[in-house]
Amino acid sequence: MIKILFVCHGNICRSTMAQAVFSELARRAGMEHQFEIDSAATSTEAEGWPVHRGTRQVLAAHGVPCMEHTARQMTMADYRHFDIIAGMDRNNMRNMLRLLGGDPDQKLHLLLDFTHRPGDIADPWYTGDFETTFRDVWEGCEGLLAACRQEDRA
Image (cartoon, rainbow, N blue to C red):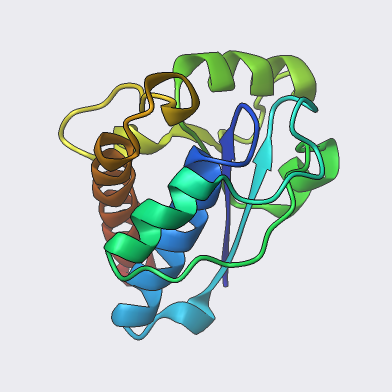
């Protein structure tokens, strides 16, 4: 089983979107039982909050089920538990490295690094553009799933 944690600043928009999208892609591929998928935040600002309504709306518009989730901050226990930790932008990466004191096991990645156009996924909390964020998250999750399939074949 591959354990994946998606991380963003507050754990109410991008990381929960990625958690839902990756879960759906794995289900459609008949691989849902091969993964444990969760999400977390680098901050405590939204701790205890549900998935943002904009995330819920864009997921529903694309036929992706949204799970019930309460925002939480990632911990060192998460680092030990998960195999892959995918951040949404460079600020998330910097904050994860600060929280964790480093990445000795090379588990931290940007989600779009699994695509042909690495970089940051914009935060719709600030942009209001949940559709563009959804497209970037979808592409990143497709790339991550393909990388997991390659790893499974190796």
